[in-house]
Length: 210
Image (cartoon, rainbow, N blue to C red; front, side):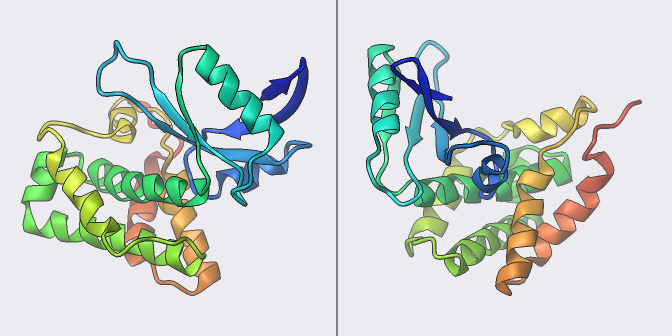
């Protein structure tokens, strides 16, 4: 929650999934503000967060939150187009988390094996296609930029969802591929790669005990 003068002014949503703010809104009296957490590479540094209203306007509640972050020494940015920022991060996470978890492999093998790299690219294109149909102003270079990010990750790096699957914990697949499939169906955009990922990982969606 965001407070101003000891009174709740709204809520910032850090839940993964491009539709999570809509879900959260149904359980709150105030309109949630979608937020995007970008964590620093070194644990010694404070994390960075970006947040903003869906329509891009500056609101007292978020200006108060921004000020509180600055006073606390948190690297925070009040974004004017948080929807694009959230979708950009969602595109990167949905495609990579799905493929890394599905293959039970790290970034190195997934991006270096022609077959899995092609699937990773398809998964990313599907997110961009759905987002574009939803009115998200993706840029022509966004696909290449995200793929470059994948290629720059350490070869042994894995996603948190794969860590959870290996530990038998519940998965966030519904917030990633599941969300994309549902949105694609509503917008008439095919998402075969994410549909397959969601269907296969549904077996472990609620966790698995040995």
